[in-house]
Image (cartoon, rainbow, N blue to C red; front, side):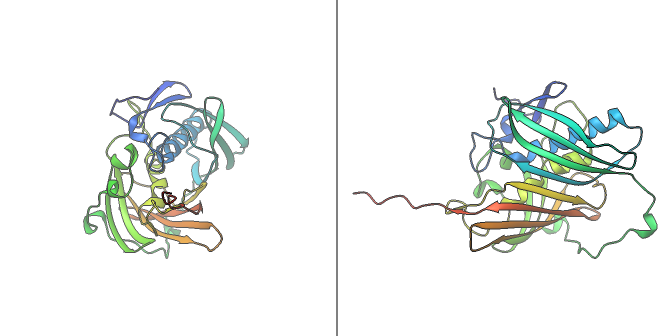
Amino acid sequence: MTSGDDTAYFHRLAAGTFRATDHVGGAWDTATQHIAPALGLMVHAVEADRAGRRDDAALVGRVSFDILGTMPVDVVEIAVEVLRPGRTIELVEARLRHAGRDVVRLRAWLLQPGETDQLAGTALAPIPGPDDHPGWDGTTTWPGGFIASVDVRRHLHEPGRGTFWVRPRVPLLADEDVSALAATFGVVDIANGMVVRVDPGQVAFPNVDLTAHVLRAPRGGWVGFDTTVSFGAGGLGITSTVLHDLDGPVGTMSQALTVRPVSPPSAPR
């Protein structure tokens, strides 16, 4: 049940039910969803649940996603549960399901905000802004509706190493405001494919998770990435990223990769 409506990545059908549009089409398989917009939708669900239960603005300090499989461009459901309630610290879980099957599980720590302006600082290095990066057409490397739906500015230092900025051309959710944090998480899973080490036609390297630690709330709009892709000798890999907005670093992120060389086609007999 896909939708050709080009107004957003998802449309809400009911309280916890959403219909994906063609903009979420995947890069490894265009018939399945690119997981990036779904992760942002899950963060939006967590924030909506928090707003319905609490009268404070508990902050998302860490979000970890386990990606259990693929799903078609179709209707999905999200349910949120508080695993560890608390006034100053909470652990929340969200599950995204398709056709009764869990596809992604999220766990987020919600932390009490505080006045730490005088303590704020980091040694994480800033990166040049989007105007200082040349435009890059990601569809030259990847197919799918999601890659086609974003603006990318990229400087590739070497295969597997680079900085880039990403901005979606469509909103995460039709006719509904989402926070800058949810919108940011709606694109962060793109990191694994923007500074590839090898041609993805020769080697598959999908990520099975994504974990991000947040330093401060992002401002929204352009999302910056300082990314390194590393492959080990035994089939494992890591994509490591410092996330940025136009004001500087906002957090760090890592993705665990399963690295799978694609077998060449058999020679004709």
